[in-house]
Length: 343
Image (cartoon, rainbow, N blue to C red; front, side, top):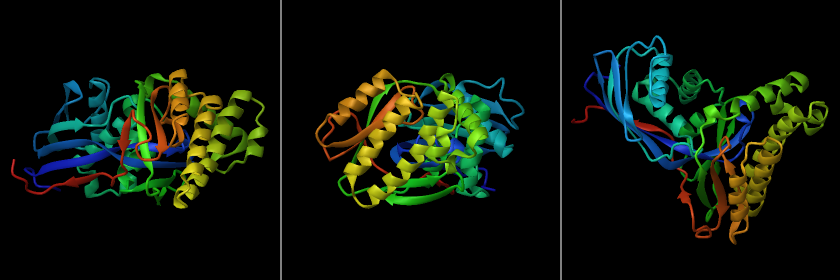
């Protein structure tokens, strides 16, 4: 256990997903990268059994006693996420400090995933748990705090990021493989609209996939021919997206390794069309943004990123081709600096 007066500082990056959305909760494939926008948790362990944190994103602090017996009385929303992490860890020793973030909230860049990872590391999860175990802990806490049965993509991307690389993530066996981004590839994020996953039909999509799996087996290993046997047209569409998206992820990783940005971009655009038509998580505003990017010279492909229902779109482009948006860099995963730092 760390000495009580150690100063703790943790950085946990957000992520963009190049391709492979709504596949993680069926054990599928995704290709995210950790980005140079991050959550920083800065604080100190304390003997008093209480967590007290301020946030530059919310005027109301997170303040609750330990151990956490129930999340019901705890607010605001971000405080419930912090408390859920503490509850999953069985934390009884206090912590006080601050949370700052450059990950936009509600933009689909995993501000909540980065927060969970940052809090878990600050509270000492890294003392005894592997990065995979921390990701799964954060996933459980996220569902406990929000009721949304999300996958583990966000936490795995934040923990396993590698500078200059995307991460090929297999959500069945929980393995990661670094995929180098081509020299000259520029990834641009364009914000479109705010959204909250908890108030979206996200859970309905998860349930539809699980229902489809009762008919044809695990979607991670299903074929398009298997999907065609599903008689319910809505379930068939949902399953078709997942199965085809897993293949697009495989093909996109191959294209990136070969430096073929044109093929990778084509696959990204095809992914958006599938998310729009089969999974129905896009919006007219997202569609317009994607079309605008694809009409821009030097853009190889574009798509929504994250859960959809709003948020951001991303483009794979030549340097300087896109004038509006955030150019993001692939960075290393979450890390912490502890030790006896002078307060």
